[in-house]
Image (cartoon, rainbow, N blue to C red; front, side, top):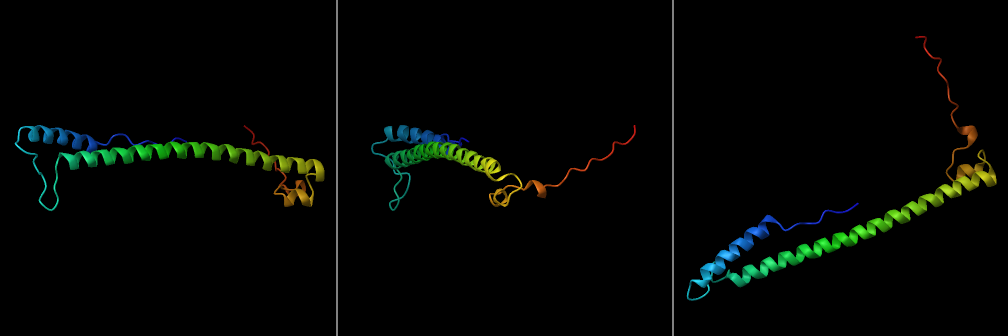
Length: 126
């Protein structure tokens, strides 16, 4: 099936641009600038840490999707095998019990005598 991976988001790109600007400004100052407040400082270190955290989560998410893809493919393959087994049981039941038997019906088949007879409609003249 293939789940869609997350690409680098616009928010991360914007944050990286903002971080570059913060680093330039900090370089021209005597000490690093706190863009937040005393209670919640916002410096180059905090911004870098948050960008790294978001990128790590994106990588973890994409890795999980790849694992889910593998499991999905394995599931589909096993489901196909199971479907083949079901078909084989029913077709072999015809050989063993016949296609009009109670056993065939109990296994999920439609008995020959229970099938609707096709009714042919006469063709209309042209």
